Length: 224
Image 1 (cartoon, one colour):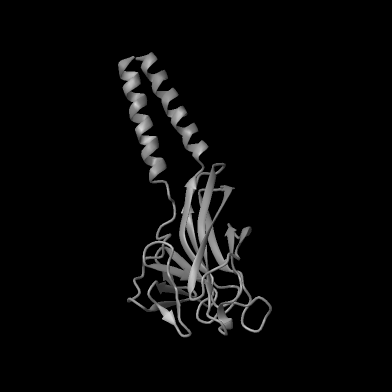
Image 2 (spheres, rainbow, N blue to C red):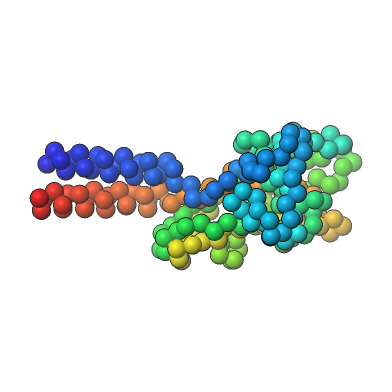
């Protein structure tokens, strides 16, 4: 019995460790490649941004000290960098990034990410509207995330979003696309920030895994 209890305790610790380290997305904070302080990196379609692949025309990896005139600083949510889905001057709705992650068919996963909205100074119409990012799971639209919160002039404000999906295979494509029109169209904007992307197994799934492992340990102990 003591061995069984010890086994269950060890399994519980393993499950807890898995839950704590369960983010299946790599470089979800866009800290690589490293942009020099006060600059950005333009990544064109087909290239890589850390573990992400760029689609559309381009995206920008922006250091949080980068600023433009009239004064506006593109502060990241976490770390020192964030992604701009619009690219250099908003080059289209097809701009974005995707990453293929390992999943288990039938298992539920939670997706958490933050969208940044920039607010320009008075008279700077490049950054005066809401920021919209589209999340696609395996090519299908899963969520349209709109950050229309009031933002202090000259800064970026961040808003977190969460949704879930059930995997249909051993690999799932997680994709984020620009959701604001290009210049001259209603609602156009030159910045849609993306930061702190996480995909984790749904907590109840982890609990069920732990219970299943514990039951298996007990059965093995009885046989012994």
